[in-house]
Image (tube, rainbow, N blue to C red):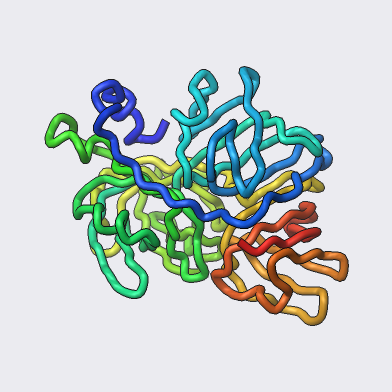
Length: 331
């Protein structure tokens, strides 16, 4: 369970009438085909929740039952109802049966939880949390956020390494007016520039886009390597001199990693513009390399619309760390 969730679970009875969460859908358009079964016999679909009955992402309702494993913040919450555990806008990964929509497992991990250190209005309204820029597309939601409130953020990463929020919720401690004190915060990202006592952390692999410095004690550095995706837990409510000090570092699997030969379905923003020519193009979605060919189908656009920060859905097959695109749907 994430640091902030431990406290919020104790207060949930008090907060049922007061907890305010802000969500805005990022998935539009028509329904889509289901991802099929890979070598593991399952499909994998990643996207933001748009509705419930049971859980819908990108126009497909994935059916849940008593056998569905429901994970949130690394903990099993299978006994909870879908709409209580999850919320519209949360980006989740759903493992389902081959060529069907029966959800076998649902996984949710936020991008970060921390204090709102800055608000900046403009052509794009943004807040700063633990050194990360979060773009808040909904004007009313942006206006309702206050400095020093603790927020949980889920969303898609853009080409600059900013998080475009599809879900923002005030963590209960920030609403309790002194009834509890938040002591830990957390942020997830990729390790780059690793040294014996620090590394750069950013939402995109390879150190591209915006990054921040994470300092750590030697005991926490065992097993760290450039390219790993990690959760950094810190007691720093705000970055100090542009960085934070880790109290725990947990290795995680990013939502863009799929088993070899699995058929996968991923929603996100283009974070690296296409290279190549003709029908054979290579680009990235949230850092995940995508390859097209002459058989790739386009829905709602063409190959010329593959530009940085365009939101789309890619359905394809995992091949050596690259998603071979069978279908691209512009969102």
